[in-house]
Length: 500
Image (tube, rainbow, N blue to C red; front, top):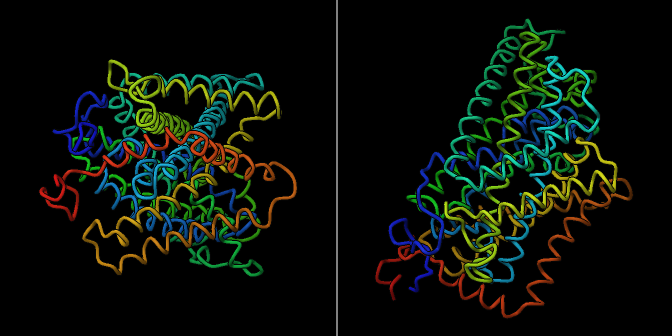
């Protein structure tokens, strides 16, 4: 192997720049923070109501199954490859450098647009908290964007300063907020079970059934918001070069985050819907809520709970924005390093972090926000929805390419000792991803903001396709680098085979 091979913490060449110092909990912190369950469970379920009514928990259950199928793909690939490029490396090494660039650029775009979304949420929730507590009684209309700008600067600084510091912050913040939400959920569930909930609401399993008059295919219009909520579970895969034991810790972080997220989202959304009520009035109140757990906490426990949950969701959104910056910076760093060498965006700072890439992605997030404000008179609620939808459409494509690459590596080339019957898992993931993407593009939205979501998402991916076709020498150089990233002693390969 050449000196660019990426293997274990002890034999990675130090001149590559990134330092292997992170443990499994810091990898969990990055994935959990980018998934941001505390934020997502407060603001994402409402978007599925127009499509599925009371069956929102059912759409999250379907999304959880789909994400678990995709998680299988990431776990297997993380066992075989350790690289800061995540899907760029996975797809590039299995399907070729051109496909790898498209997938990697797609995930950079996903994280970038999610950074726009989550920084907007900080502005929305943060300003709501300041107003409700009287700390800022009469803020100007653009005040949420002031908080958004501060968050982008802080996320950039933490990414440049130290990912260890950043991931510790992420895990602490998200853990505390999730614990608070689970406590409120438990109180609501107990009151539903004993029969003393407000307005006579009771525990019911009807939230997992399709309402009369709703087509089963409509569930997949709601499933996209489930995928939006889970997005980021794979973020730990960008720490493959910075983990002390990547072949063990990164797969554990990816799978553990997915299992936690699945249980969290399904249980909490079910209790949320039951807490609001499954009748027409309850579903309507659910859909119009600005903070689901905050409103339930105020109604079932006390008004102070709403303020506390809103503050927690604000901090969770910041953690997600930080994780977006960390993940996208490492992806951009890895692609630049392999394509153009250890200069420019492919160079690390004296602290061993991709500082230049972090500054660029943070600037890009700010530019997207500025463009939306100036050109489209967007408010934070607009940039939240627009960024989240565009990012998810791109993400589904990146996940699909990664799944195809895993099928080729594991079941066609037989590089890992995996039973052949397990091919049904990535095939099922591919089918679910494909149908969800199809159902959210066809029929094509004729007007409104939704008309432009596929255009922007497709344009972002098309830019990568044009770039790799226009720069064949760079594509060949990427191919040479990607051919070297297989671990020296991967699953199913002996030391002798790896050296041979």
